[in-house]
Amino acid sequence: MVSKMQNRFTINAENMPPFVMSICFKKGDIFLGLGDYKLAESNYLMTLKLAKLFKNVKREGIAYNQIARTLYLESNYGKAQKYLKKAFEILSPIKDTKYLVKCWVTTGCMLRMQGRYNKAIECHEKALRLSKKTGEKIDTANALNTMGHTYWLMGEYDEALQHLSKALGYYKKTESVEGEATCLNNLGLLYLDMGKPRRALACHKRAYKLRRRMGSKGGLAASLLNIGNIEYTLKHFESATNYWKDALVLSEELEIKDIVAMCQSNLGEVYYRIKEYDKAISILNESLKTKTELNLVAYLPSTYKNLARVYLTKYSDGQEQKRLFIDKAKHFAVKSLEISREIGHKGNITDSKKILLMIKKARKSN
Image (cartoon, rainbow, N blue to C red):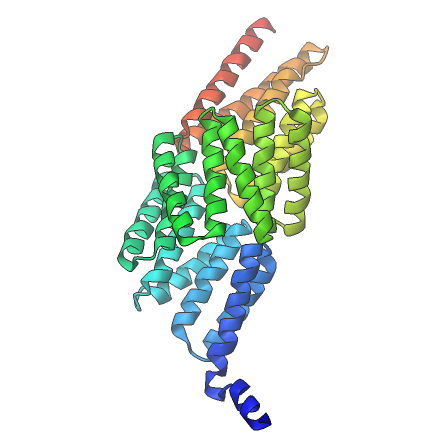
């Protein structure tokens, strides 16, 4: 009886390498889903080490891709790009279509964060074409979702809604809770920009519930940030501030630097509203520093705009100092307009022009 039980649980030595790699890889996927990116990265790196040791080329390419994905979520874009390059070099010759889809999705996401929208769309389209070849609905959903997100940032709202709605349908069919939560989050962002804050709030609250159920800390940080954005739009300023502070604490704990920067930018706007200008300038400069370090070009205009508004409003009794503040305001508004034009975001272009017009009027009255 004992020998039978022993035989049942004995693992052949020849199967050990793939068995151990599989465990490390699955642990990486679990931690990635939970938003614990450091532990996910650690397990994927172990998978990569084992794949190299046992000359498992395909698994090596897959590990490179997953490490790149994790680094992207950690906002470490330069390092992520290096791992993605390795993944493409390995997976392209062996034509592993399934993971090449994932490589193109991640590449598109990184280009989007840098404000290189047209290049990002090209990557999304490649991912979509490949996913249709494999017939994997979850890959198709991911490609549609990321494409919809990029169209949202471009201010192409009809295209964004079309792609995100299709993606949500696929996620529900495949019962992908993580995908559904991410897509609902993106729909919430879109609806807010479309002037539909109530619909946006419903999407974000649903996403938040799904992420709580999953235990995804990284996802929860993003949801808290975005619910705060809607509360702010609805003029529930105290509630918005509380959401952003919670998001900031969680994202700092997880070292999710892009969310940290966005929370800082939003809190700076709150301090501006309550006329704590020095506090606003301090936290906005922190946001600007982080976004610049991460090359978050797509998100730089919001901080530049906020800094321009603060300096435009922050007048002192001395006319000389007043001129200094107006000059600083113009500098930041011009930077916002330049980047907004560079990345082609219509909404930010309009906002930046409005601020520059206000500055021009302020100069005349000075």
